[in-house]
Image 1 (cartoon, rainbow over the protein chains, first blue to last red):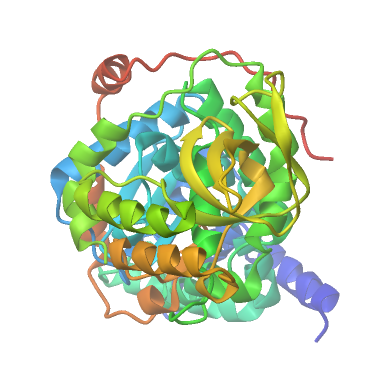
Image 2 (cartoon, helix red, strand yellow):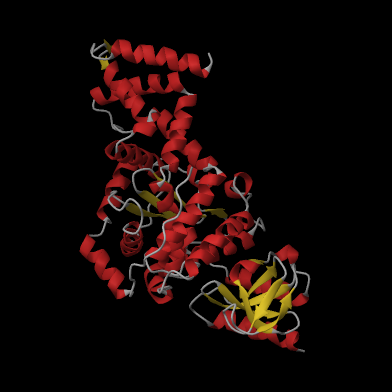
Length: 291
Length: 168
């Protein structure tokens, strides 16, 4: 069945259910369809719905990764992140910055204000401005709703499958099941997206917006460039071929795209704080365990 | 002679310093680039470095690196005029040794997946209680007052920056 036909059938299905209070095996399908459209109809999302989807996404990601145990480090990264978020286009989101205990250098975001960074990435960062650069890039993905739109696209591809899984979710809820917010299928969808990453235009956009956020917050706006250069220099020497290197624009291309943005910021700011000492004080344990 | 001396000096330097930095990183010039006396395009131009020239990064200041070229000239290059060298690219003995030292000092595993996309390692990891971890995450959120204090302690001040153009 082609996509257009699927949509027509589903729209008819939802219309028939709307207001009818139809239940199947004790599951209120109109409620379930409502939950399904929560993901599929992303363009019309309220901020509350976006936050709810983000929390489900974060839960799915956290089911696969352990938190770093260092509470001081978690609070430090949150303070840096919150300061940056206050200089983004969406300061009112309930931002959460999460350090994951993982030796791979990585960072990613989820809708609604969730930003994740691994201890492996912290071990490659040399000062607070570089950390700010990484976090600001992820903040930009959130403010631009990049992951939300990508999830919408994935959900559309599996229209009926999602509805059926959400029926199961509704049943779980009725029975007081443990996972109220996510389903196994939703988890798979999330993990697939995060395994593939976003498209290159989203990445370029997040690079540019992230540089602006960092500059507005008073940090050295070249910190992120330094991190990218270091990661680019690492290449594939003696390590596994990564998803990043296989599926995303080369770092050299990103730096080329970023250069005019950075030079445009040069004359606009009077502050370019680096804060290497404060970063080292707060991340020493991660630096030692990140490998 | 200078090339012979600089490697042991840098080796000692790398092992002695306790605070990490990106100093003493081998790099490749990605385009013909002017070498300046100071970190400014208005400063005296010392000459030019050709594309693919090898340099050692000594210091970063904003969007500039202080570099030492293979011919021992020291000056400043725009940051985006270089990329970090990889081991297989090291043509000179100096660069190869320097990269070997950098590897010894590397703090992490070296699995670089960048700043998007989760890792295959993470995704294949054991199942955890995501909901319980999410509750812990909530507990790390700072108050507005603590964030303001944190910014003040770091002498961070909000800057006025022209907004970036909206996407079409």
